[in-house]
Length: 539
Image (cartoon, rainbow, N blue to C red):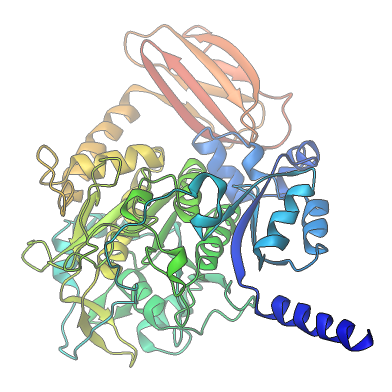
């Protein structure tokens, strides 16, 4: 009897040992601490992030509240479960464990659903038809040579130099780069200028869960160089005076669904810090475990975890720029996730003369939307390579950050425009806007056209309308537009809550805010069919 018992225990142990560990996302029903956190916004977001919400009239909501800590603890204490990542935006945990152990989490009352990375394990996917397309595993496409030169063409193609000539070089703006690593950014001379000027604000390695972000694959370093690199008379990035957060979410050795969750974590961190623009030169279609591979049907902007997270990032007020992918010559030639997300600005690659690069991935998305959105130089584009030298390389990995820098400079010039307005004008300025194609999208943007249009509008606004003083203590005074005798004034606090409202006219052209607490407010002025929103600091 004893021998039989030992045999059974040994057999059970071997079965458990060799049971397939799965990746899955566990979603929760609610956030019981929502009221507590919402009442104290600075426990969730920095002041800079709150200022962005006010500037663009974006209220705090359920998605901003952290995942319930007691839920995390109970899942963590569950048998056989390892928590690998969490997302407040999607109210979910990324877990690993056996199929049985993960499914047992459904017994917890606060768990709403479970999505396995292996879709055949999901109840709704049991009869899913597998695609016969053979996918190529994603790699960090990066081929360089050592031909020296400068980055003039890649910015002049976009007319980005017009912004620089008008002193819009990214100063005061923040960019988060989410990538595979940033080795030697703390050493190479090409980054000496941004180090000396304290333009690197920080970062984090989400893969290894530590604060050493000057490590990993040099792909992220090369991406950063196209935006912030600076070598006198040799190379200048497209936003040399921007400030940067450097986040590692990509494991260059392994390709797993966990990287999607780590990306969402990084994007959430960027949002909480008040970042303006996110650049990502990554994309996901295939994984080391082929059971996790995506099909073209999944490239609909709402299936993958990373694409859903990217959509939320945009809703928080940031611009998300992502490379379209380098699969144009492959059997799988479509854009990857999160480039398929509707609100992500997805970037294809052209060569120095503006002709589409054959490797640049195609659209449309599965639900027949135009992707990529626009293009920039990504063939024979100048970067800083792994040796710290100026060299050329190929990939939408670089067309994306080249464009990110110019977008950042444009937004610096016109910060009253929200992310949706900036993105739409970029599309409309592009040379194929009226006749987009599956590989080029709307084509190559023209930032000179956008700048000139905005510049005229802004000059007219200054003549027509203004408010003063700003900052102020008691009153906001208004200069009325011509032929307007009355305006409606509404004041919102950092939570997007209306705290004051009244009509002002030319006889008493001011609003009393003396009763309000010190802080930042958004003042919305409405007259005729015009609505203007301006940030005002109350001392």
